[in-house]
Image 1 (cartoon, rainbow, N blue to C red):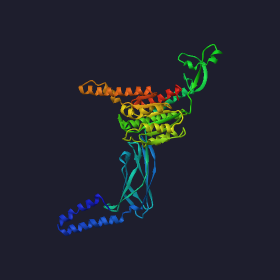
Image 2: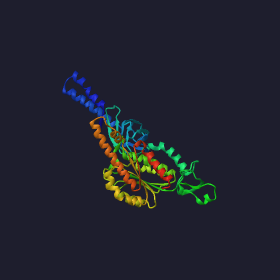
Image 3: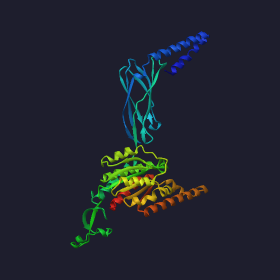
Image 4: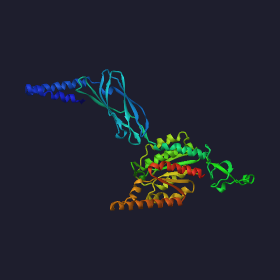
Length: 430
């Protein structure tokens, strides 16, 4: 049973007869009137259990987008179902409206729409649906709950998609689809042409030169069907916030742009998310389906507050990639985690694969390093400069061990990673 504001108002109106005829009998009579009104309303209200509820609508959306979920209500009773329905969702789903007015005649169906504006990635699920059905007087009614399960997967926003057309244009230049040709070494022979300053002397075709009056070089196309493994470090360092979002979210955005670009280049793209165990994996997926599969796989990823297991990560990579591949590892350049986890086992990875380590740089560190306005700012600048120096030293150490290092602020991080991939492809290193 549920009481409404009308019940309180009806009880309050009892002050008038009590004021006219003040006695306990008057109070008792009015109390019986209120109880009778409540009993009549509860008896005449439609039973909540007679309602049949089903959901339909969106099952996924991007973080910057909205999704509509519909709730169909069928009245299976012989009484009019009139009242209020509350469709509860988790706060991060951004559900609106939170309550719906309900008026369903016997045997009929009504559809209520809830608009979701999620503020976080991952699966958003509804809680119970609470229904309050009132009697004809609107004084009281019946209240109950229904379990109506549903799931809306909120995917990363993929803001770096705007950089894809420019990178595809560069890819077409590398692939010979436009007039420009790539100089230097590649892996697939394309054509012969005259030597121009800047060409790699190793590309000179001496037999063709002997038959010609000028020096002739071979041009190459980047080989297709290469293997690219995107590795996301989901350990505690990925939880650090850079600007308004965690490092992991910036890494996801860059990983999606790289996946889209590599798939269009004809390369096979796999994904692995790891900290001390595998959190997500995408393998052996066709080029047309790989981006949707990766988007779906990373949607629910959250940083784990544990130290990364470098040995386990390298072991997983080597187990999954038998052929020579490009391994792009999204992690942090913080010295302590790298020195304790990845660096001791890095040689077993670089000896078999081309390795790129991509790390999000914090623009705030650059701002602090330039501060000189006060004693506090000087101390902050000294700490920031020390952090920058340590990261540069770690990056130099990684490069000496054969690792390509990409470090950029969030705004330019995704295109920087894709540019590194194109540079390796142009140099014939894939």
